[in-house]
Image (cartoon, rainbow, N blue to C red; front, side, top):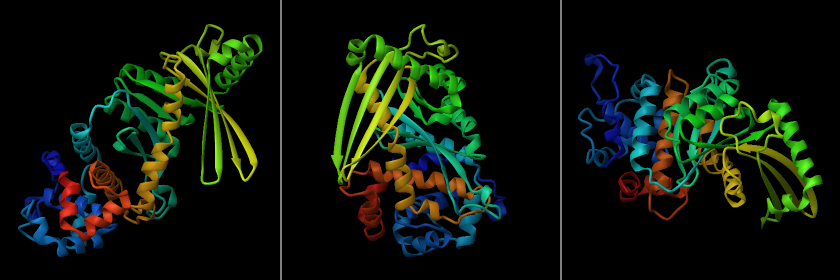
Length: 367
């Protein structure tokens, strides 16, 4: 089934007089053009003109391909929340159950999407299912400082039961743990200076156990080493159950363990080390917590990186109305389609195949 069926109920705010082109035709054109390497309105128009015969196999396009300004006007007037609901409906249908999944939350700014003042550049928050490699949702945030409220909105929208939510230290807040717990999910959150008292007490707790019960600490320690590209990284995970000794545990919903992660990197025989602390609703399980914490960075390495390098999102100068947010949703839809495709190639390679081959493009869209 095509993704486009999930957009059937999307409201078309144009008057009947101006409905020369069907809304679903324009959405289908936009997503398929992005999947074939299009970056802006002119690209989408040119792709449509060159592939109109192919496009008409799946949609009517009775009035042909509109001019690029019309495409921009139609996309910019779509209501972002309604578009997100359609996107999530599609993701939920195609997403396969894979046990307990890590869902990473992170913000991203489109640096060139500003209009006038650079502070108006679109900042959005995405939720990324690490094991499936799928973006589950993305929503506009007023700014990086307002990310927390956007994350709370996404938590309400998403199905979290049986999954683990990860986020950076900005979101290490009692209200975030409460929201995740209410949805039946688990969490692993980094603790930094924004929770100074909690951070200091966790450090003191590890110091106490290291001093008073070294053998017990050893039982709760896991060491892992990776090497490659001239770099060796050693990671030591220590996970301890939360006890009454931790006064700052109060108010954190379902808090069960605290984690100390020491990362030591060796590059050209030079060593550097850093230690980070986390709180989690997960019971002590070292292999599991190590995987969860390391998985969080997939949203940067696999999602944000692909959007910027392959889809050129950070270079996008689309600024009209709600178009930056809506096009961000369409890029994530296109990226999901590429990841889901059985074609053997990188995301960038799949986009090239879609641009060159009608058969490859059809496989990417319909599987």
